[in-house]
Length: 233
Image 1 (cartoon, rainbow, N blue to C red):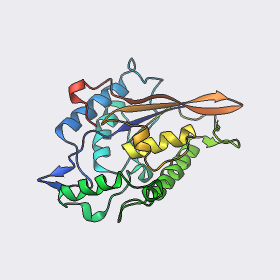
Image 2: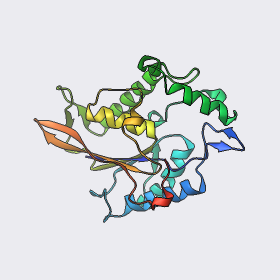
Image 3: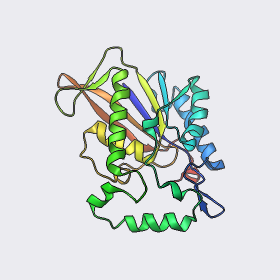
Image 4: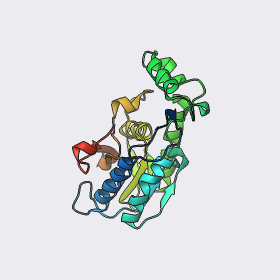
């Protein structure tokens, strides 16, 4: 089974100096989404390991707008999975001056690890976020015939498991999912360890091993489909 993770295109976080918690894509973000769609649908481009069986998407507006051209190019419905949603920020950040958000993020950089797990005041904690991603991913994969094996780090893959699954989500979501599938010890800052730019691609494949299978990382933050002057972080 191949799992292709796409991060959403560039979002318009700031409008007239105020933050948006659920932003739309910028014009550049829409162009990035179109290029990602063309790449995923192109049988000659990497990754390309057969037709896509399922297209999953986060409910966030920026993810759904990124998934729209992907769905059109593949001829598939983008199915919303709530667990793919990005780490949720405080509700009162919506329409607040952008300086409030910038100051909070800047202060957080110096926090000790344990406080990181607690998260920002009013936001989803990193503990809850990690648990949401892991629980949702394992339930979704189990429905497709891919389940954790008895031995840690190994997975059982059913003969009728889908060949390719594409998920359009977020930097935090995708990085947490990559870390979990690879069996890497969890951290509250996985997006800093497994970085993905806007509309970039990560690819994981199940590989038979030790009587079961492991997840193998075949690409991360791949933006070969984007011209260098169109790449954003």
